[in-house]
Image 1 (cartoon, helix red, strand yellow):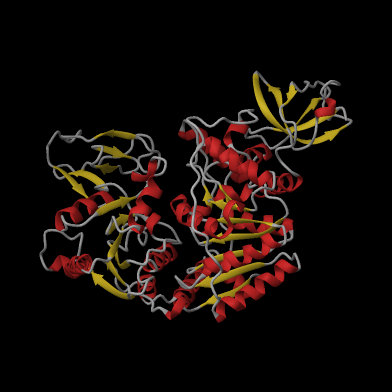
Image 2: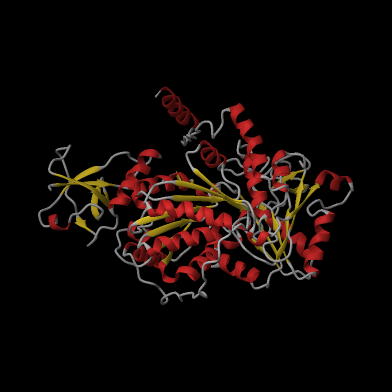
Length: 596
């Protein structure tokens, strides 16, 4: 072949042809990387095709082939091509997402600095005897595995009903058949516990992939999967690109989670993309959740997905008791602080004295959610995106939670120069401060994206909870799902209204999901659990359904609203964002787009 078709990671929806020098010809192969010149830049390109002719006459030669063997196989090429077409992005950007970051820069290996990372060893675990409901689910899924048939299973199981055990036993079957599996989890914070569960069952057959790993470690795990030394890839949404051999099963745990939606290029939804990768591989995919997304449950009820249900907790443990606190009544009592209700304060104290653990959930980080001037009404906003800025007391800074622009805390109002600045609203920092003040004898930790930025922070916090070194954990949605701590008997939701008041048609669904998931952290051991939900809207159907752990009641009510307004799952919605330096340029481009 005389010409190589190259895909580049640039925002252009086309590939480019380069001539193949005779000396390079024996090394050229689809799936390898090559050095190419594009304009004045020297770039890494992906060889996606070979031909004897070129669509253009003026053509540059390849500068060199980087790889001895292809870094991308035929399945990955096909899958990334589908992604680029479906999500309207360049093929090069989706190919770039499929390899570890050192390879994106043209390297072929990466050396570990400071010596090899110590391997963790976990006690070997064995399969647990399945319940009747688990047995029925396993029979259905293993039947599809046996036939190598594409099928989407929606595993709807209440919290602590043993969904993970179903995944583990299905994957065990996959490994016996010399096939591979991909397991997606929504948050990096869940990785340490998930790793322990899977490695204790499958040992070195498990490879981990997530963005907080060292580059060398991630490259090593990627290579183990590509070489067939590991059979199970575990990680957040990017693990979907794993170069596994002979794919036999994909698991998407907590399939409802919004974290599966990638906000940066290449934009994609890992749940939808998982279904397509399974379709292409001819294998089943399991979507698991205690609170399935409206779209998935709708498709299951229509018969497009196969619905499997686990309605009881393991050992028939009871679901946590729910108490809904009307915070309007707390305000009427004339208390100075409306952060922690009288009832929740009392229950935290009793839980501490019983040597049990408490989780306090507030899906808003920072100390105060806004600063305003009592004299003129001025509110501090981000100069870049005009969003109200959040005060973080630990750094004495105002931070924009959208673009991350930061500035120092003001001492006087920049408009009227008064000192009457008020710090209002509450975030996880303020809750931590309040809990320290009320329970100085408690061992308290906070878990949000501010605290867990440093590598290994997630693991250290979760280890302290597991070992009983922490008895009150305060956090955002990081603590709301997937964790299994038998000593947690009390869960407090500081404000159920945070997600309820978002300007989003899914706000009711998100509120129900978060409350149900965080409630599921309580009572997973031998002691019964309780969830205390603080809210200013106690009669809202999402809060009432979450308090009763009644998914069907919520689904039916929400579906009526969605049908009336023609929202998903009855239609698809695409958001198109245009950005420019000047308003008139963005408006002009928007008009052109509408006409097009």
